[in-house]
Length: 282
Image 1 (cartoon, rainbow, N blue to C red):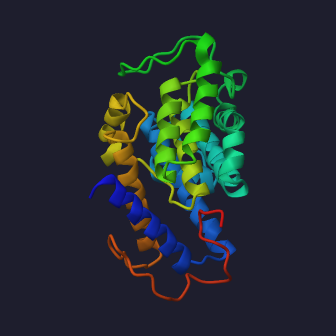
Image 2 (image 1 turned 90 degrees about the vertical axis):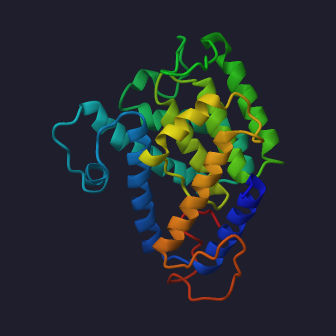
């Protein structure tokens, strides 16, 4: 299946979920808690955090500290959970146009919430030293060029949102942001939060990048030297992961996956008054 077919399938899945899966406020809260845990676990794990998914749950949901882990690993977990909540709030409370107009402030705020407990002085503030991405040949802009690079990123995002499919726009936001690497640390986690912010805002599913996709994820990030989605393996990966997330969400709600060309038929809702689905703003 080529990328165009995948994007069309995602759109049909999104519409199908909106039609069939109507959630109560209690169900929405339960799903939010679930995705806060899984997304915090997978995103932190990509950066070397050693907490297991159960330890992540205990810390985020029950407030139970985990012995034998580094203090910073605990801070990263709590902070990512808070940044995840902010991501949901921003994505649901704003139009894409509003997000685009305030993109740089939103990015700084996400980083501040995630990194503030770790290093308050450098959270939400562009770095003033050169950085190098470990194991990568990509060289981020030097500090004196960061403001220009981020402004260009914001302007490009605003332009592409008019023509790019939302899933491709989310992939672009992740890719370009991590190439710029504007902060001293926490860029990877911030880029994934930013990607999911766009996805949620546009009615798609949150993407978790697990252990099985780790090698391909880092490889495609490294080799994605251009920002165009055509012939770009990183965009292909994000599209595949979004389709997987949609299928997983359907299974969680006992909705049969209809395949590439689903027929939307009336069905019983997931329960309760119409509140919109668990992740979308509508």
